[in-house]
Image (cartoon, rainbow over all chains, first blue to last red; front, side):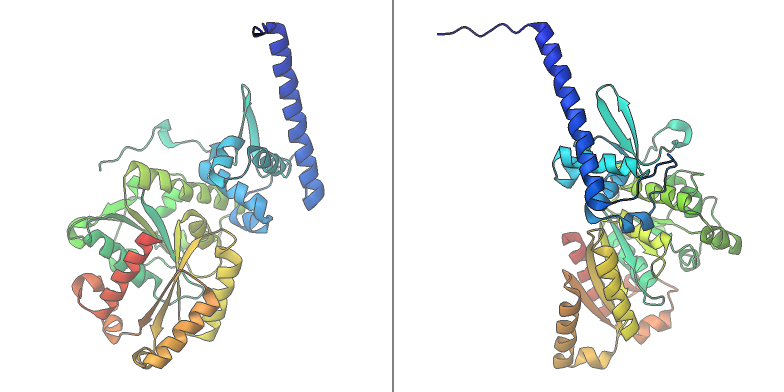
Length: 133
Length: 258
């Protein structure tokens, strides 16, 4: 019977780092493939466009689904969008990143997670509405 | 979890407001908690029907980000709901407000969409309402498309006029389907002769089913009693035994099951 091999903590960190790099590379490649496939207009000058209903109507079906879901969720990771659309996380990640490149969606990193949102809006008085039921 | 129902049409004068008010009252009389919102900012009408002459906050203010939704809602349960709760959110009927709402830019419309979408959390989750009913503007304009995108179910009302039928069909194909909306169709003001003849009724129903392929289709005759009442009262509450009230009762049940 062979004993389980002791894993070197440095190797674990290294493997984790390699995995993150590969994930990031994969994400970028998926975005490039999507852009090539659909020939979408990419905002080059960094000026964001507006994701209103008329824009939603003009998007291809697969991107519209992602964009509408993000509008509903307000602020979400690719995982959270994928849970709603029932599509793979990698697919949603690619669509969300494409929407970012098109200037309709913004992206921010919090630690390891990437959050996507359409437009931040300040809540009134910073408090949640309370209701008498 | 409750539902947001948008009542929409391709053309004006199809009976959206009549259906919205009566559907809201019907649910409230079934013991449900309902909010009826007037999203027809070009031609607000609920304030006249419910005889509310002034309001501190309007739905316009909510969409402008000036106030919370609960400040807009007037509780009319005592006067109009036998068992449940009926809250009403009004659109500002002043000419200045109407003009201002028609001149909004795309960025404002995008924020308005976000605020309408957040009603699902504030009204259905937090306030615990069973139904939110949007009475919308006719046709394809920002406020009505925003309402459709934010709704769970869309009830489209059409007359029997050929231009209305064709326009409605296009709207279902090119708008509701793109947003994957559960849609029901109401053919309103159908000639009584058509509905009283079994063969003509079956023929029309068959034609509609073939054209629209929707899960819920109802046909409502043109009732002189309703025209006579002129939206001055909630017709189904005053006349619960009227055939119109019976049809709407069926529509309400169908929406619950959609």
